[in-house]
Length: 286
Ligand code: PAF
Image (cartoon, rainbow, N blue to C red; front, side):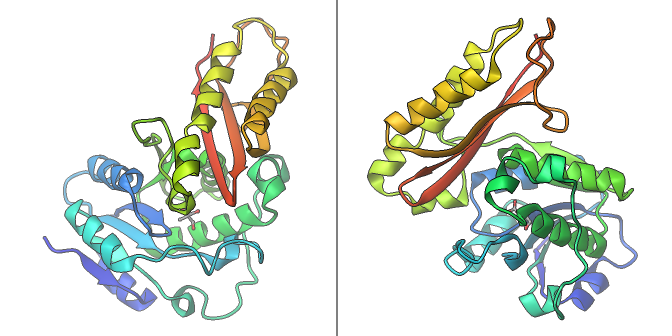
């Protein structure tokens, strides 16, 4: 089956009208193997006859004025070919005027405890932009399943929370992070790295693995572990925004005094030259 490409909301609605609910993968394009794995996961989740829909939309609302909205790589032709080859049935690629025909002044504000920390502390308004566009896309596509990568762990948690609290009729599925052979998490922003920076970049994942290995099963000092990890990054020329140990559920601060360690996740964001990379690693309960 050839993949259909639609741009306008009217064409999207016409294409989906009366059919079985899709499995949906929203993206900002510049696709890599990580996105294609999410498409494969959507295909596997969708029962027979349910289409797989992807969207490509670089969402201005989630970029701060100083961020890379204009420079964000736009590679539509290649992305469309990759999606078609991966078995995507329908690509929704709206223009800004399709999705935001008037200034978007109704916005979805996720709770501060979940969304104004970590990424949200360094990128104010980011999760308002993400939640607003994802809610709007969900409303248009009406998916039964939606797949988001664990690479953007906090985003996944925020969207799950939004879907639960707004009683959206969608099952939010988590896709595992895809990594290069040297451990670097795949990201559209890796393309900004120089050859030297690309060689150094896997050290972020290494730092997370080392920190995870250092968390004992019993009581632990989370702040000390985080500090050590940030110092190691700084010593190699990185500028870390944060390295943070959190509980997987709701990203709550870990209770480091409990005897039985709950499932944790360590999340990090750090700049290497001009490129800001994020990564995370889940740490199972002990
Ligand atoms: O993760 C992304 O690519 C974006 O934040 C998303 C979910 C497509 C919303 O613009």
